[in-house]
Length: 383
Image 1 (cartoon, rainbow, N blue to C red):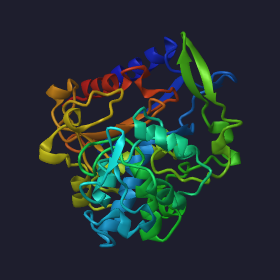
Image 2: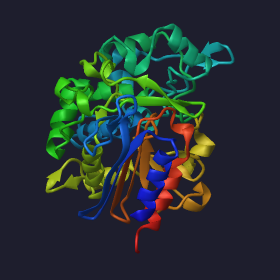
Image 3: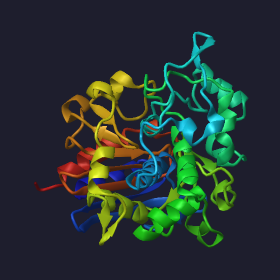
């Protein structure tokens, strides 16, 4: 794994990342678990392997898998209308050239998992995103409970018809609420009992306990060659229980915890004899569900640090369809996602490989670390 450690250390030594933890596992062996740099630049605290990170959108695969556990139990169907479980949502109209029109069809549970619900992002630039902001929809920073979200969305239009476009918005917040409504527990308790405790993910949750604040990393932006502190661990909102349990971006975790989650995925849904989800369900989730086998470059209304050509999307996971089109080393069928602070993971079932990279630099488009990390990892494999 020399290519991997050299890549990450170069990023830190060049002053591009404050620090990072990188973990690679293959089959039953952890090949790399390395901490480098600083978790808190101002206090000169070194990075540790048990450092707690804001994983932002790496929350989405966890919450999506949580909902699919209920699917395995026959508690809902993917084509069920969302309004069946969240009646306050109603049937929102669609924004169209400054006006509103009726939607072509109802939003389904599958749409939420695929990001084809038509729901926008509160931090976007589309006119519907601006309406979200005016309505006080602030995403994970909201002071309102998750249960109020459908009612707050009911009077706002969709950005597109359900099923028409892939839009990276707030769909997974409603996935989390479905876990609550169908599963019968608050989202934090549901995930703890169904995923975190069975996997031994002891540092993963929606807030950081007081006893663990010393391990919580600072979060940074990057301006004119220097780090700009955007969230101090000592004063962070994560230090108190969250009112809004965001399935979009609300979790914190460690590299060790998230590696256990990804090793479970690489193991077909089980780890150390504990089954979290069935292997066929997992294969179904990580297949490309975009219409006609399209990739995200053709179907998406949102970009990001990673190129979207050659990449599809399943139920909560991005999927590598064709490495040559994606212009990245990889194995077809690999699945992945990342977070706003430049975090990333990917799993290759064919290679029995799980990779986790955690740092804290916003935005994720600052550097092409995900593509470079993938190349370094695959170059380190002997077969």
